[in-house]
Length: 318
Ligand SMILES: Nc1ncnc2c1ncn2[C@@H]1O[C@H](COP(=O)(O)OP(=O)(O)O)[C@@H](O)[C@H]1O
Ligand SMILES: [Mg+2]
Image 1 (tube, helix red, strand yellow):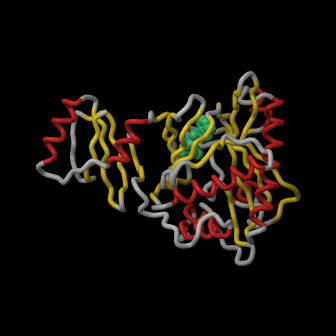
Image 2: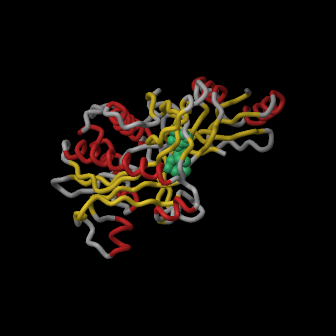
Image 3: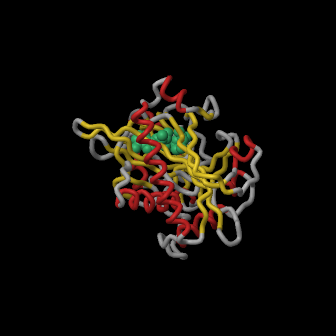
């Protein structure tokens, strides 16, 4: 592996196999992997005279160690250290409306990694199976590889967002009972709402799998509702993804992906203030402060712990 670390303004043409935009200490930079030593040497010579360059050992090491499996809107999956494991990297990207709105919020990935870790660890502890193994560092966690079921499973307790709009309900109205909805996970189709009939007819999940998914979703809802109520926060709704985990000869449905303020609606019980990604969707500002407040109330991070400027942060790659 031949890699170097350059400032963002550096123009490197040809030669490169893969380019990543990184943020190191608040500065955007390019980390570039080259296909062979010759290409690396040429590019290095071409740019060295004009721009300052230095290798960033931890990033170079990370790049050479791991194969990228998938890059999504908010996270990247890398090959894990053992078969059947993956490393889930939390980016700072905030997206909404199927990525039509996109911003980088410095430190969001660090907070989501911690909040999601806390929730998944506790789900595991109370016997709700998840993909989570352990947090590795500020932005990465080790997870079990699963076969993702292409559904966003949404549980709603209070009317908000698309449900309020679709059915003409007042935002904030408590629902007669918790409602589970399914959305087909497809960026091209804008994640359409689908019914159990669609899911089983098209074979996205079998009827017994769907039963397991719904049972998991309700258990997660009960756990999260209580957890947040205890710290003065109302769980309005949330989304989970489930996957098939194959261990030895058996297959189990487990909770995968993340559970964080990116995937929940969380309102302060007293002030009714929104503390989740709606702050970004609705341009309310103060997203990072809300996420930090949630982490603080859950006792996860102390107030002074830095979430910004903590080593290399991948913000874009191709
Ligand atoms: N344990 C797992 N095994 C395999 N894939 C997973 C696992 N957990 C989450 N994923 C998938 O990894 C991706 C996480 O990246 P994300 O940025 O959320 O992607 P997306 O833009 O597709 O939502 C998602 O597509 C999610 O379905
Ligand atoms: Mg996602």
